[in-house]
Length: 395
Image 1 (cartoon, rainbow, N blue to C red):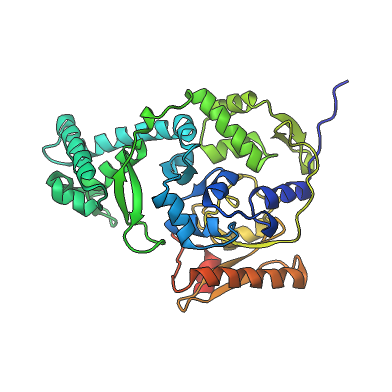
Image 2: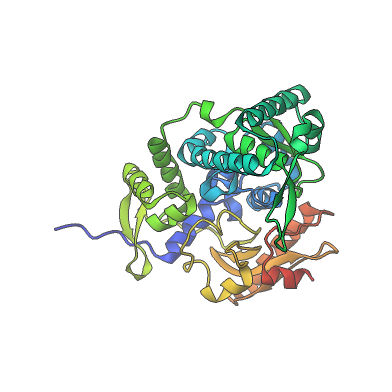
């Protein structure tokens, strides 16, 4: 007779979440690199998310610690990778993410950019494009660090423009530099450095990088298995569909990667079949009760496709935008119970959509809001992707 599959219920998953994602105070870390490793990668489409997500998990939160990892030690690398989304990944994991995911995306980005430039900019062909890229890299190497405008001053061809969506209400004129620099960054030959302005700015300066294709990395199938193993360690137990959604891989590649991890089948609430690593089947003691204020696009909130075990479906219209991006959320013991925002005067405000946890939860949320306000200081944070509740609270 076959042995029954282990059952892991929602409370067990939430207990793992509080400990492994460093959200419970007892498990917070002193270093940004450990935070990124705990959640595999930090969402970076919104520059502020990296800082807010990291600081929610740091024992001593503050932008200086995150900037150290990003710009001084360069131990975090921004990559266009899973789901064609920008993430900040630990330098040690970056080659695995590049081989498993980013290189294929970069190749598609290059094809699209080449077709766009050659088809829309007068006098451009593949030879000229290659020459402009080479001169751009040389100019950046000479400067060491440069904004896009600085590079366009050195390489005037970057100022050429293309009219996008001509005749449409959203017609725009775009400089070729925007797409060329994006592709060079996707390939790793340049990287995003310290932004102009504060830590909420996405106006990055560029620095020289190392092409991801030149990094010592395992072949793509092995890299996908390695990334799947890391993801299951942080987000498991979870389904194949969760992993496929999180990575953006094909279903075939996802199944092959999971098979290579030696993951075993478990049963979740409702009889749903899922996967967990062989050493992750025993019950996990729940941490002390915890609250957290997580930013829009936080990696925990965006870690699974199926979210009912930590998010009431009735709260989705308040907390997500129309494209499926989650906004700032309030958590209590592994469940989303509300949302938060910052007003123009700097006040951190929130609304609980559930009475779960009662006074204890409300008191803990207030303490986390004060902690957040304490390190954010005079900075004003507006999420890149705004949601109904965030807009309402911030007004």
